[in-house]
Length: 133
Image (cartoon, rainbow, N blue to C red; front, side, top):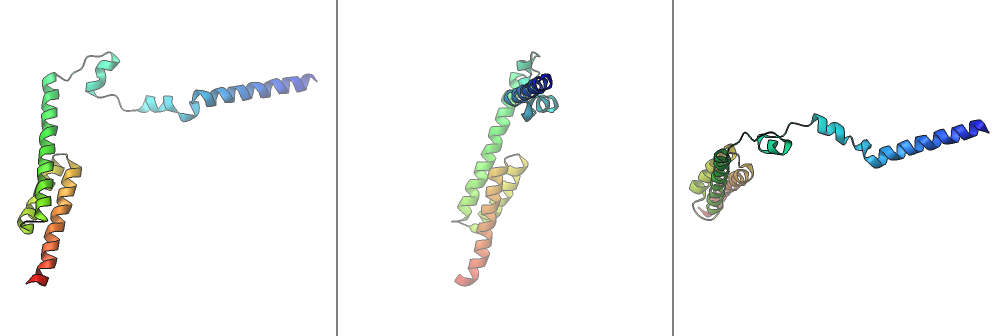
């Protein structure tokens, strides 16, 4: 009887430990992921007790650069869309070039769409011209 009681208590303790491990989320390895994650960027250091090394002027310059990059991307998209209706070769090639510039400046989505629409306009022009000439 004594062996059954000790076996029962050992099983019960093991079940409780397993239940505690599952309920606490230790299976998800969240602690481990936090330990090997990249350190926070300079803008978020103030939340960790250290002073921020980025001045307000630098943040303003970054915001201005991002806004300028978006303007180039939107202009490239506008030119590429216009090339579908007017002067497909001239505006299509311009849209492709501006799209490449937008991609290089970091605006990959708008630049990619501009390149694709510019290529579509130029290809459609050269494919359809023989039918109308």
